[in-house]
Length: 369
Image (spheres, rainbow, N blue to C red):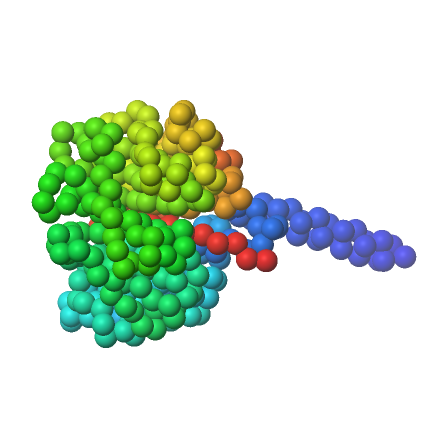
C-alpha cells in the first residue's frame, strides 16, 4: 500500500514536472494558430551565392530556406505570389547563365522550376500578381507585361504603345482579367512615374498621371511608383520620394493625394483591408495605417530603422513586416505584431543575422485550416 501511494505520488510529480517543462518550453514568439496554420514566405536578394526564399509553417516562429544554389544562382528576387498553399511564383533578376528569373513551385516551395515559357525575354522581372491560377501577370524591364492563363506554363506578351516600351515597370495589380494596372519608374520621356491602365485585357492602354495632376511632392526629384493595390473600386498607389500615397475611389477616374506626413524617403508596400482601410510601410522604420481612406494616419514603432519594404496581414491583427538595411542596422529583418501594430517582436532567422548582405523585399502569408 505504501509502495502504491509512493508510486502514485511519483507519477503525479512526474506529470506536474512534465506540464511545467512543456509550458515553459512552449514557444510564444509566434501567432496563435488555433484558427489554422499560418504559412508564410519572404523573398530577397542573394547572399553572394543564390537568391533567398524563406518559408515558415508556424507564423514566423521558425524559418527554413527553400530552393538551391544551382537553380537560383545569382538571382535577386523582387516579388512573390501565393496562389494557394502549394502553388507559388517568384520573379527576379536574370541568372548569370542567361535564364530569366521567373520560377514556380507546385509543392509549397519544396522544389522549384524555371517557368516553362520560351516566350519570356531575358530581362529583370520586378512584379507579379495573380487573381487565381488562370490569371497571372508579370512586369519588368523594357515595357514588359506578360500574362498567363495556365499557372505560368505559358506566357503571352501584352503589347504597350511604342512610347512606353523602354519604361521600367515595378508592380502590377488587377481588378479582373480585363481591368489591369501597371506602375513603375520615371517615364523615359518626362519626369513623372509611369502608370498604365487597361480595361480590355491589354489591347489598349491609357497612361494616367495623377502625380502631375495633383502636384504631388516627390522630394524635388523624378518620382517612382513602388506599389499599387486594388480593392473594389478603390485604387491605391504609393512610392517616392516624398513617401507619397494617392488614392482613387472610382477606379482611376479621379484621384486624391493622401500622403500624410511625407518626407524624403520611399513608401514601399501597401496592404488593403477594405476600400478605406490600409497599412503602408516605408523607409526608416515607417509603418502607418488609416481607417478613413487616408484622411488620418496612425504611426507604429517596431524598433527598427531599416527600410521596411514588405508587409503581410492576416485577420486584420496579425502583421508581418520585412526590411533591409538602410538606416544603420546591420542586417535585414522580419518582425511580427499580434495586435495590429501596437507591439512588435523580432522573427529574423539566423541566416539574416549571419549574412548582412541579404536584403529582404517582400513577405506574404496565407492561412490554412
